[in-house]
Amino acid sequence: MAAIGLFAALLLAASSTARGVKEGGTFRVTLGGGAFDYIDPALAYQGASWAILDTVCATLMRYPDKPPPAGYRLGTEVAKSYPRVSKDGKTWTFTLRSGFRFADGSPVRADAFARAIHRTLAPGVASSGAAYTAGIVGAEEVQKGKAQTARGVVARGNTLIVRFKQPVPDFPAQTTMPFFCAVPPDLPSDAEGIGAFPGAGPYTVSDYKAGASITVERNPHYGGKRPHHVDGFLVDLRPSTPEKMIDEVERGDADWGRTLRETYFDLARGLARKYGVNKGRFWIVPGLGFRGYALNTSRPLFRNNLKLRQAVNFAIDRSELEGGAGRGELTDQYLPSSFPGFKDARIYPLRGPDLARARALARGNTRGGKAVLLTLDVPQAVVSARVVRRNLAKIGLSVQIKALPQGAFFSRLTAPKEPSDIFFTPWTPDYIDPFAYLNFFFDSSFIGISNNARLDDPSVDRALRQAATLQGPARAQAYAALDAKIARDVAPLAATTFLNEPTLVSSRVGCMVLRPELVLTAACLK
Image 1 (cartoon, rainbow, N blue to C red):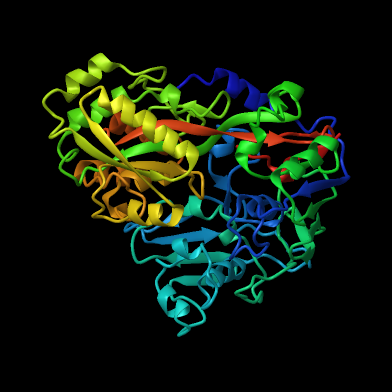
Image 2: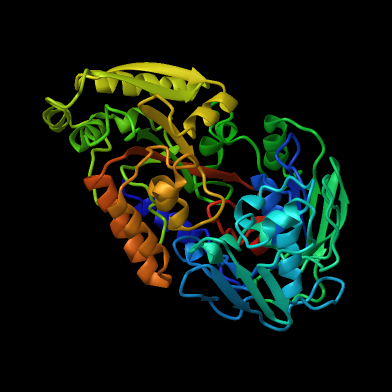
């Protein structure tokens, strides 16, 4: 992976200390134009929605409001300590802290988290969170309306027990998502989503008008330790365009907004030219969005053909796939370089191919010399696919490109018997954990879900599943070693880029913490 010393230094500079921080004021947010979906934790799935919910939610586990890598080290919030797990890896037991309260003054107990889980399973409520809760014992009965609660969820005072049908070694990290946000035990489920509700985090939603505005105020009964400085947030949800939203932040009519990523890199707008990069208003930091090309190990071309998979990794010119200066960080590995424990193994070339190595590995291993590459039918993806086609022609592979609309593409991407050989693989995980990259990419249990290479290697499975059982630094180190080993010795996926995350704020915003997006809870006003 490309060196990130500059980015790391800028990330550290982005975190302001509490000394001399101005308290109070209303932070203005613009989120029109489809950037926001729901304020209901069970239904919200847009990044902008999660950014707002992060200010009002208290979760069992949490990543600290710090820049990476510290901000990517899993810690506790309402949970008193890391949860206990049974020997079979199926049952997790959380003991909760006392002192957390909802904005209405009621205490946060285990039933607040049990209710959050059951709301994702409620019949008629199409919650994306069900992807993480449907494996709980008894979840199916709740989804079918045959039970109000799942047998595998037990809430007694400050003890929460969650039992799954299969081991879920990354469940503590999953609980950092808003789906697991503490909610009042009597909060109803609604297919359209609920509006204002008492939060247990530093702030609470005091008013919600769908498609118009959200008012977020301080939780007067907050019992946690997250630093928070402003009096609240006023969120404008009125329809707008990406250009107008950025205009508002530039003029100072809004302090922050979230819109289409490419708009921030528009050369005509020239944000980097106007404000510089990471100097106070316009920030570009390493993000979590991965791009690469999975090599279908279930097909004759790449099955039991390590040398050709390695040849592809050496032949691809990653510098042509970056998408423009500042837009992405080139990589030949599968974990973000900002993750704790990451080691830059420097396996494949980043600034141009190594054709000599690639041709030597490919010689005698091209098996007919034809491949089909499946990609999205959007301009940048098609342009990148053409680069890959040109690169691989130099090692004796003739590549046919098939570009499909989003729905058809993702349907075929996850089909276990899809006849394509190479798959464009865009990926942004829902939660921050190496499991959400390496296990999702390469564990055979995720074939048909996220293992686009269709890799079915028992030794890889064993190593990944063992790493998933570890905690803290041992977990980070084990995954870092596997990251390099799989890229070098198995090569099922040609990693190319981690997208950078752009952020624009008004001139009055301080206390910048980027993880990699702006942490609103930690922000202050100058």
